[in-house]
Image (tube, rainbow, N blue to C red; front, side):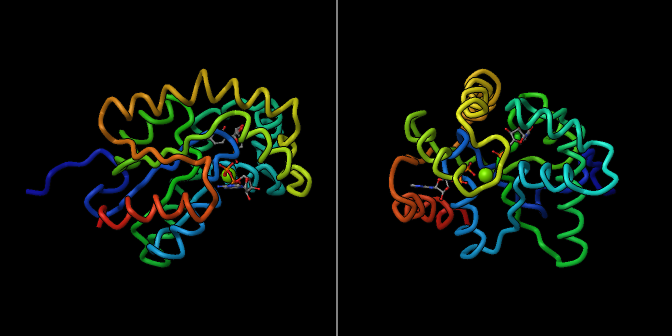
Length: 203
Ligand code: ADP
Ligand code: C5P
Ligand code: MG
């Protein structure tokens, strides 16, 4: 008799790595390299939310816009729905089984709900850098990103949310021995060298 699973995906078949770190720590940048070298699908929760925000007819557009501008965490139902849909699509149309979930979970409730209903993660990559470094990078990115939250006012709020709401998620994964911490103060190439060491031993 097959064992009963309560999650959408079986963690023996679907390999999920959470990619966390403060805003501007280089999650998206490093995910692009990992995707290129290790055949992962890169799903950024922030990108999926922005896409949904701009989708004509979306019932969540206004809500997402407000949360993002204020640097707050969008109610988990919306984000989990978007992630699960994107994962199913990649699996069903391209047979993809490895996923980098970038910028998620950002709140304890998201972590618990995702791992109990969608799939359990294998480990979490955590990119650590000082607020000073992050602020510099975000303000620079803001010169061309067109993002409504890459300005000093929103950045301040995002740092507060990271410290109060998102860091506890990382601490919880640390306590369970599931975090691979990386010094993200270094150059993009140096950071990727560290990332490679982790992925080369993971497979
Ligand atoms: P995140 O997805 O974590 O918010 P990004 O990958 O978008 O971060 O990077 C934020 C900004 O910092 C981008 O403009 C990116 O080019 C730049 N950046 C990323 N990693 C580094 C690094 N190691 N050193 C300097 N700049 C970086
Ligand atoms: O990861 P990124 O910086 O692109 O996220 C931008 C914003 O999207 C966050 O500041 C937050 O408002 C929202 N977000 C969220 N929940 C997530 C990821 C992003 O609410 N898991
Ligand atoms: Mg990003």
